[in-house]
Each structure stands twice: as structure tokens, then as C-alpha cells.
Image 1 (cartoon, rainbow, N blue to C red):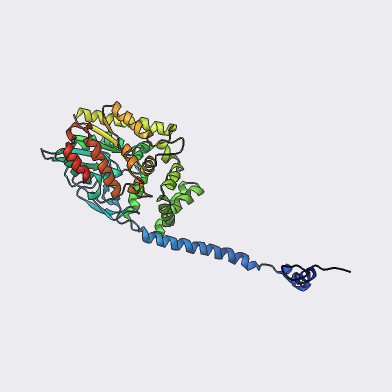
Image 2: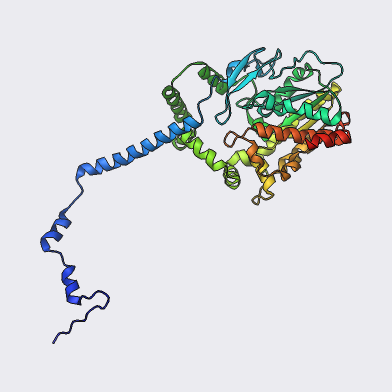
Length: 431
């Protein structure tokens, strides 16, 4: 006799379960014969692609809403190809422009083509004038003039030292051209025209990196950018021209990467990612040559750049000494460098103080004075918030932070003419 066991948890015997799980033979044959229609092999991928495109368009629209396109280009107010002066502003001109992450900003130029309300040809007898040469950070790119450290610093120096101190901003945008060190060396007469009592050169890592760029005068990339910026064009025509240029000049993967980097979608994602201090530093250190100055052992390319940079600095300091004008230099860190210093830790093989030590040696070897403000970033939590996350230039908060650091170091006694009065410095610091 065959015994069937009941499953206590279900109440069914084994035979019942077997009968319940059997399909009719006709149903099983129809399941085997069922196939996906051929048209679905085409429609389903197209539907997926359409969904992706719709998501990208929506994200691009949101990104453009948050970060609108720039207004009138700054290039409209610049003279780019005058070998006798280098890059300068058109005298008494004004332009409104913006960085993608920043506000709409006016850049107004004086008679000498500098973003300054003071005219370069005259100076009050009682004023101690500091002339600030430098690149786009000194220029205050993306920041209203009255919020730049060039505008904030004079009041702080006056409060600390008790002297009538003027700052003349001789900074100029230089990206896409030869290094600014080379331009200062070749056009030092423009610095002297501002009647300086002291020259304070604000350096950035990009100034050293730019030493590998070509000499001024042959600037096809800038000339092309200038001509494009002056012609009104639709978004699609600009995109098409950029795509053709990218694929013509680069490999397919590099061209695709360059095109995607121009979209507001990628920009929005980067902006959100770069808000994280640790993720931003990791991302920046993976950027290749841009992070070369942060390496403990710079490669041959960076060593060559430093040698060329020293040659330009030698020429600048020689001309400054001949004119009897004190020469002072200071390095402003870039966003990743400032974050690393504040964090107090970094991966093996990197050193955020390395370039500062190199530049100190270069400046002092040729008779100049070097100020160190990197140490001040150690006590600032998240100093990278003082920079535009993707663009990397200091924002208004960053300029205010830099002005406080410069005021502290300039009045510390290194510059006898600006030595701080103890009581005045205490009052200025408490404000």
C-alpha cells in the first residue's frame, strides 16, 4: 500500500502539490512558441533612447535656468593683439559679463586700460601706493569691483598702519595667452606708469602653468574666441560649430568629453559634486597635469615651467630694483590647494606647500620679499567655499578672506612702511 505524507504547514499531500504544479501540455507549448515581435526589437531601444534624451533635455533646461548663459562678453572691452602693451582694456570702456556660477558684473576700465577707478598718471603726494599686477584673480573676474580684495585691502591697511594707502589694480585676464609673468617682464613700463611705492605681485598656480603657452602675438585660439563672441549666434549654431571644432582637433573620446563638458547638465552635476570637500579634492588630484604643482616630486614639464618662471621673475625684479621700488610677491592658492591645507591631510605623493616653497626660493634669490599666507588657510574651515566650485576663481567671500590675510601679513613688520600700530591693529582685527 502507498503511503502519502501530509505537509503539516500547508495541509496538502505530496500528490496534490504535484498535480497543482503541472501545466496542460497545450499551454506549455504556447509558452515555448511565444517570441518577441521583430518590431519590438526596434521600438524598445528607441523608446529607451527617447527617454534618455528627454531626461537630458529636462536636466539641461533646469541647469540653464539655474546657471543662465553669460551676457555681453568681456572680450568686447579688451585689446588682445597689441604687442606694445600686451592685453589691456579699451580705455574708458565698460562691459557687463558673468561667470556661469556668478552674478552679472560690470568691468569698467580707466584711461590706461585697467579695471580701476584711480587714473594711473597721477598720485597724491601723501599716498603710499601699492600697484597689484596679476592675472584674473587680481582682476577680480566674476566679482563686482567693490567686493574684490584690491578694493577692500586699502581700508584695512589704513586702519592697521595709520597711513594713507592706495592700491592700484593692474590685474588683467590672461587665460589662453602667454603667462602673465612674461607680460609683466616685457611691459614693466605699464607698472611704472602707475607711480608705485611698492609692487605687490599676486601669483597663482595657473601663472606658473601658463609658462608652457606660446609667446604673445600668435594667439589663434583667442582671436577665434574673440570673433565668435562678437557675432550673435543661436545656441544650436554655437553647439554645432563647437562640435565640428572638437572632432576636427581631438580624438573621438576626447571630443565627446569636451562637448559634454559644455552642457549645463554636466556642469550642474559637477557643481553638486564639488560642494563636497573630500570628493572635490579627490576629483582634482585625478585631473592630471592641472594638479602637477601639488606633487611632492614635480615631473619634468613642471620643472621646466619653474625654470622659465624664474627667468621671468629675474627680469621683473631686476627692473624693479633699477627703479628703486620694493618688490613683494605672494601666492594665492587655488581651490583644491586651499581645501587640502584646511583638511590637514592629503594622499601620499602630494604636498600643497610644495609650490609655495619653490616660489619663495625664486623670489628671494633675486632680491624680492615673499609673503606666506598659506599658513592662514589652516585655521579656516572649508576655505574652498570662498571659490566658485567649478570655475575655481575666488568669489566675493573668497576675496574678503584674501584681503584679511594680506592685511595681516603686510602689516606684520615685513614691510617697514606698513608696520602696524599695535592699538590700531587690535581694533581692526576686532571689527
